[in-house]
Length: 126
Image (cartoon, rainbow, N blue to C red; front, top):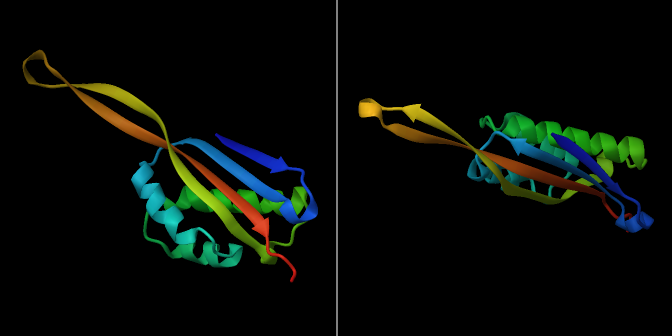
């Protein structure tokens, strides 16, 4: 589930936000990728995510694309001037299943999810 949040502020404080909830990735695996792209420019982030060998980089790449589309279509930002100002990964709900084992016992299988939030801002024209 992806939520797009755009805040109407002054021109210097405008930002495009994207929040993806219940992504079926471990929090630790997603943070390993988010730490690499935090603070980088939009174009550099796309290159990094496309070349990373991790499975978790694909949903994050889709989020960055979505945030950039929001920034360009809804706010009129230029994609060449965007950078990732904030990127965070939080724990989501844990899906639990019981797996049958020997002698009538069961074993708990925990499938973790995470919430990923990415905020894009435009570089200042100083």
